[in-house]
Picture (cartoon, rainbow, N blue to C red):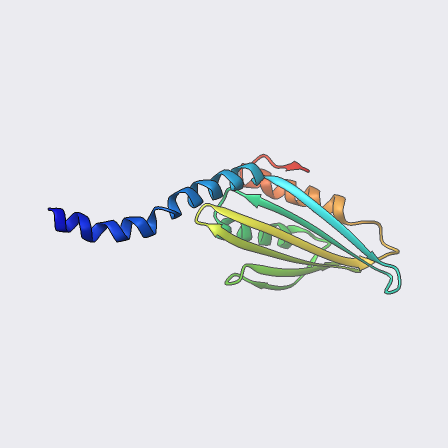
Length: 148
């Protein structure tokens, strides 16, 4: 019995630090979940604007991607350029705006949705529409998202 404990001790010592790290990750993820963040950058020389929206959603990444893809397909004003379910990435255009959407799996039940839109400075900012679309995705996933 004593030899079994002595053999198991190194394994336990190696794995012990991982338990608090996992607990801290879960705490951080829960604090950040369903909070939509947005960033806008403008390049006047190139007459271009880039807008980014991210949100961590407590839902499986494949489910988030499929809901996002269906939302784009149902939008009569958008044209889907590409969709790839393996890296969970799609690109679409609407007028002069080009959007890229990525869904990253953080764990089996948590995903990060990232949307980047580029447009000309003559177009009105897209971030209000992006945020509204992300809010719609959250509703479809039965999650309550907030804007930070």
